[in-house]
Amino acid sequence: MANDLKVLQERVVEAAARKQPLRIRGGGTKEFYGRAAAGEVLDTRGYSGVVDYEPTELVVTARCGTPLGELERTLAERGQLLAFEPPHFGAATIGGVVATGLSGPRRATSGAVRDFVLGVRVIDGRGQDLTFGGRVMKNVAGYDVSRLMVGSLGTLALISEISLKVLPISAATLTLVRAASEADAIRMMNEWGGKPLPISATCWVDGKLFVRLSGAAAALKAARVLIGGDTVENDASLWESLREQTHAFLSNASDLWRLSVPSTAPPLNLGATLIEWGGAQRWVRGTDADRSRIRDAAATARGHATAFRSSGARDDVFTPLKSALARIHRNLKQQFDPHGIFNPGRMYADL
Image (cartoon, rainbow, N blue to C red; front, side, top):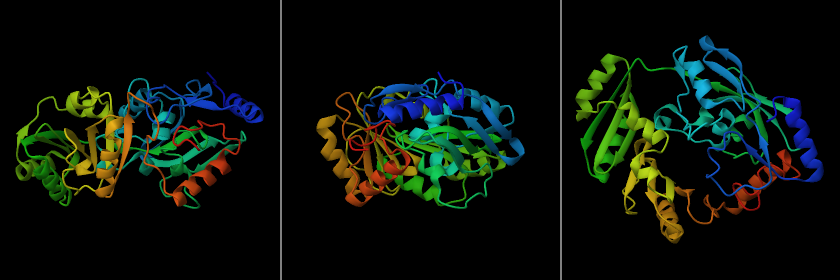
């Protein structure tokens, strides 16, 4: 494991000279996600630690190999958190969090990973040490390369440092549950989403609608009257199971599809479904044989489907790109990684 930035740079320069693919890996907790990667492993865990933290400015900067759990404990000591609730899936690193761009239950109300990235420091495919963005929330000058790195699965550059906006931990939290059909749950989630309610997460599964409220005690009390339902005891375990995918619906599926659709889209009739993010994220079970049916249903709803976890071949994980978008992706790859050494094929076969 490289514990010095120059060591990482030298490894990249050497690989570029040999045109040797590198498989960038932190904790390795999300290797199941995306197409199978190839190449020599470039382990980032040695390049770890918080570089700068200004609690009063709500900004933290950390090296890519910093364990997510360690960073969250540092923030919690000052009453703060990563509001997008990234999954750990084990010993995740903050570099992997940004590279995969996965968010947890709070994403629909607080924002996604990319909404909290203020700046990044990266090593490109030539071994150059580049910095984009900054460490302040008002730094918006120039092309937003920082957020471009989010969800790129390490195919553009090696993210070495990340500056993130953080938020205070809520004063109080309450979860309510009520019986509801899928259609009624979607309707209610959208109705409540249009009101000034302190909703921080929603989930519908097995005929039950769960709503998490976070904020001041008085706000929670008022919202509880409007939403109704019963209080869920020990509710933290529910949202943790959704964040970490240990919930029975998710963990028992060897083949799992993640659909992103408009929150108001009606039931998609794809079988057993778990709905999050106010209706915008829907999880369904399905094998490769169901691929066309699932993708067609998502497209009809004006969304897209990702083969999030598969027991079969990991091809066409992401919805195929239209020609114009594919060209943009290829051009970006060429600019950042001209020798094609970073995680080749991890997103699409030709990238």
